Structure formats: C-alpha cells, structure tokens
Length: 205
Picture 1 (spheres, rainbow, N blue to C red):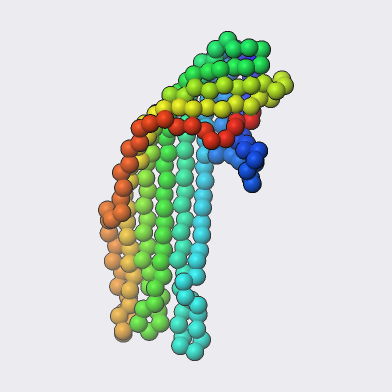
Picture 2 (picture 1 turned 90 degrees about the vertical axis):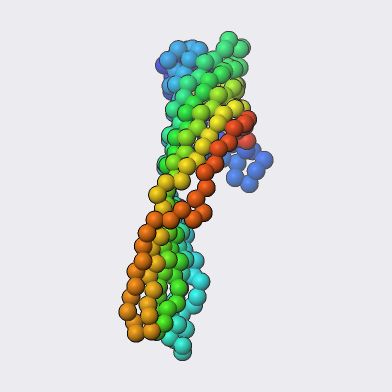
C-alpha cells in the first residue's frame, strides 16, 4: 500500500471482453499521505465521419453528395479519496469528484439543387455537462505499485444545450445562391440524472 507521495496512472480492463484494455481518459492519483489522495481525470476526444449519400453520375451530371459529422469532447473530473485501514494489500476508500464536460457537434448534409449544384444544411451546436458524485471502492495490491480496483458511486449529473446555429445554402433554377443562417432550438434536450452508478470494468493502476 502507498505510504504517501506516490503517483498512480490507471487503465480499465475487462479480461473476458473482446477489447480487454481500454482507457476513458488520463486518470492521475497523487497521494498526500498513506490515507488521502487527490485524483483527476482528463479526456479530450475528436471524432469525424463522412458518408456518401449519392454517387456521382456522369450521364445525368448528378454530383456526389456527402453527409459529414464531427464532434469534440473535453471533460475534467477533479476529486479526492480517503482511504481506510484495510489490510497490507487491501485499501478501501470513500471520496467524491466533480464532473465537468464540454462538447461541440458539427453536421453537414449536402443535397442536390437545380442545375445539379450542391447545396447543404449545416448544423453546429455545443453542450455543457456538470455533475457531482460520491464514490466508494477499493484497491487490491498485487505487487508494489500494481493494483486492481473497482468503484461504485451515487451522484447527480446535468447536460445543458448551448447555442446552436443552422446554415442552409440553396440555388434557384437560374443558379443564384441563397444562404440562410440563424439560431435554432430544434432537438435541444436538457437532461438531469440522479442515482447510483458503477464502473463496469476493473481499474488497473
């Protein structure tokens, strides 16, 4: 067990699944003493996909059309742990953490316009997440500086949509372009969750 001053990094493992090792961000734990530790998890993710919705046709002069989606997610989870006596290898603890997140989405759907021109509808939005969790768990030390652990918790989380804009580009039969843009609340969804939660994988530190 730690004596104080150690630093831990963690990954998640599920030995019986197809992808036994995973990571949901970088999690660092720093021990101030043998019974107290500060923790922080940081995640930065980017996702981008593109799907062809119409093939180009040289005979009809039809253009290729695509739908693209991209998103960025940033999250930060600072917290603390208070460890109990346990045994030489087993370290049970209680604690809590604050969950902060921010995400953006960008969706662009192309469509065919008169004269086989390409128009589109582009939707850009963002959301803010905030939560507070109380947790309890344990670490079991297999060797010095190597442990397995699990964790359960109870908390509240809210997700709030922020500004969303929609831009539409169309063409008339004469080829003149029209661009319309503005704010939108369509499909905005506020969510609040309260209840227990559990880490579905083992923590390997």
